[in-house]
Image 1 (cartoon, rainbow, N blue to C red):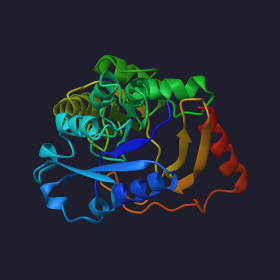
Image 2 (image 1 turned 135 degrees about the horizontal axis):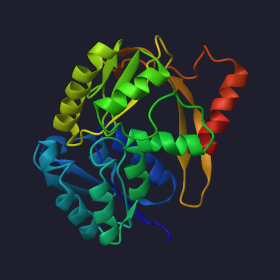
Image 3 (image 1 turned 180 degrees about the vertical axis):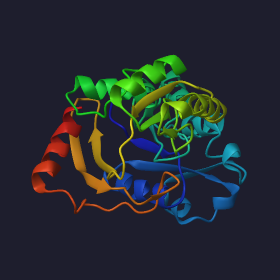
Amino acid sequence: MELKRILIANRGEIALRALRTIKEMGKEAVVVYSTADKDALYVKYADVAICIGKERSSDSYLNIPAIISAAEISEADAIFPGYGFLSENQNFVEICSHHKIKFIGPSVAAMALMSDKSKAKQVMQRAGVPVIPGSDGAVADTKAAKELAKKIGYPVILKAAAGGGGRGMRVVEKEADLEKAFWSAESEAMSAFGDGTMYMEKYILNPRHIEVQIIGDSHGNVLHIGERDCSMQRRHQKLIEESPAILLDEKTRERLHETAIKA
């Protein structure tokens, strides 16, 4: 199906960049906005602009019924979520499908898979991607955690399978500390993500955090758009992302790009 009119379910600079691209493609751009953004630049440039609620994100940019209604009223063929807000909301993707509206982004299956770190790691292993030694899936309990830690050696790190942002993570230096760390991480993960599932890996001291960005379509075409060094962090939150990663030699860089596309 050819997309003629696309609704941008985001705001500010993200929406403005998407709007410009949609117009360059010869399509019509529909934007949504909260009452706080009624005078925003992206609203003025849109072909169609629809107010979806008050200032709070929960009343507007996270308001699924309002966004779906805006798409139907404007007769949009598709919704582009940008990043943040509803871009990784599986329920939103399913609702778009139910209303015969194309969601421009990952499928529900892909989101579900990548939201579980232990399952994502298994996918990478099957693709031949080198992974850090650790559990093959979730760690059932403290007994299993202790047995695995003896096998891979301390220090180890416990991680929330469904988590992110450093929550539900504990570094364990010795066996005497493992049980307490396991229960603490599991409790934090349950509170933060509603899922206490844990997995474990060998803890790497002073690593570099290198990411390769990829983009793919529904036809199986996948491209990489380079790598970036995200090693400078505070409390597991990135402060600076540098691209290209200047510490990589060309051979390693090419291997990373090829592996990312393969996976």
